[in-house]
Length: 640
Image: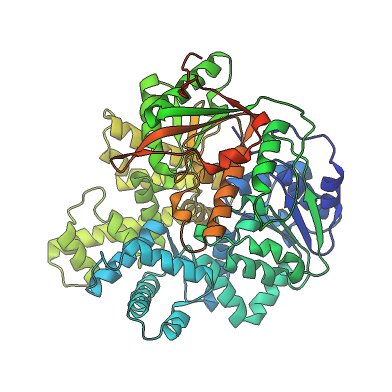
């Protein structure tokens, strides 16, 4: 498995060549799945630099660290020069870009240079604290919903001050406003910013300080935005501000792959491109280098039923291919058993496990699949558990964050007694509350502060990998875990992996390298945790599979109510229905050679057995592209 595996041609097709060579003015590249967009984008950037534009005047923005690293690697290979910070384009995610701007311009913001980035878990912790302090019922005012609401509003460039003014007299919105105000007070007190601030605050900064805006517009004369269909309002506005002076903005996207509206993505940003940039050029990449024609015919037929899209028709030089296999099964257990037995069969024929994916609509489907894989002893990897979310990793990162920002109480509380140093909950509250301490308590507090001083010195003077080795030794954290136990061995292995991972950042100066690592850790996506060299079947949701490709894809649970999901009913039903169809399209186009689709006649959900109808999407695939596997009574054969 990887995201660049398909065999692309030595030369470009006409549309690709036009996109690479178009270097003046706005450009929209409508790139179908598997059409070589990353290759086009990297060659375009290299072409611009080779024509004389200094590399540091080029900006490229992606949506995952994984995509950014891949782009950097390709561009460095094309330019044939060793990378150096001054001689390379700025390539990173939108959130990394926001962090870069805020740290550079910290004197004009409410944040210090060493501000902490609060990830989703940290932000939720502050929301819960705020609800508790306001004596609100967390069942009525659910922390996760309030955090989601605040995130949505920030993505729309609504600040808490604006929301307070607009909340009116409605009871619920006034309560939300009060919680939000207290949440922002806590963020400020801890000198922190949440994910959404990394997009909101740069826009606010540019609007309030035209001189800073002008400097960044001058700095980047060529701007590239990948996955433009996934931009929210804040990202859309930020990109527009940066590109306004030179107008050399190139955006790449595909409306048919917009599947993240639940986190603010708006495909209408692509539809608005020609209005925003009237002199812009539009180039469509339709030739596919990944999948067989049968797979593409199925995908094209499915997606053409959506109304809100730009017409395109994927094609390939690879004619024919295996038909799409459709499997009805009696239950989800039978479905899982069929999947593992099928994988066992293709493995015996020589297909590597890493080239196989099992895709599902929702995470709850993974349990029954994992049971079947464990029973069959087929190696698998469940994507979704992020490396940087593991306790031991978050603890060590908290040491670094707390050493650089003593006001980051979330990080301080996390490690003040890890490993145990006699500072329990009561003493922790006294220390954080500034309450007078007894002599012995003062000794413990001073020892902890001295340790943080040592960690700060280590962090700002040593390369990140060496810094982590030293921190693990000085804090005694590694000794918390017993290598003879399964849990201890796993956590120690993860800590060692952190040191190895940190070597990627050693080329920067120590402070810059550590900040880059902390930002990447906070912003890591599910895909960033995927280990491509591990020979194991990938089990993941379709959302997590976006941008990836595999030789064989098993798509499970194609039942009405599950895929498309039952949540599409109600308000905006048509829009949500179209997004579910786009999600199915994304699932189909992950496969290079073969797709197996299955559904269960009966599935147990929340303890209740439910009789299912096949997904309505299955009837959209032309019959001549499908091979049905069932006996005369509609039950599948297991003899493979």
